Length: 98
Image 1 (cartoon, rainbow, N blue to C red):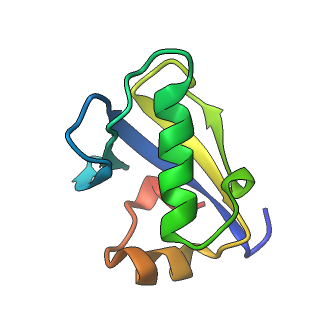
Image 2 (cartoon, one colour):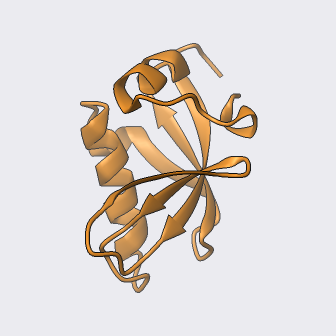
C-alpha cells in the first residue's frame, strides 16, 4: 500500500441523529451514521462522509470487509494516514495504522 492510502477500522453506529465521529472504540474509530443499515445505505453514507471530510472523491473510500457488519475495514486512497489524523483532529488507533 502506498503512502497515499491506508486502511481504517470503523465501528459504525447506524440510525444516528447525525453522521459524525464518536471517538475511538478499542482498535476502531467509532462513527455514528444517520442512514439505516439497509440496501447498503449506511455503507454509502459512511464512505461519503469520510471522503467529504478529507476532500476526496467518494470513490476514494471503499469497504474492504464488513459490508453487513458494524465492524468494518475501509480503504482510503489518495490521502496519507498522517493527513487524515491532522484533518480529523485525533490519532488513529494502532490497528488502523497500516
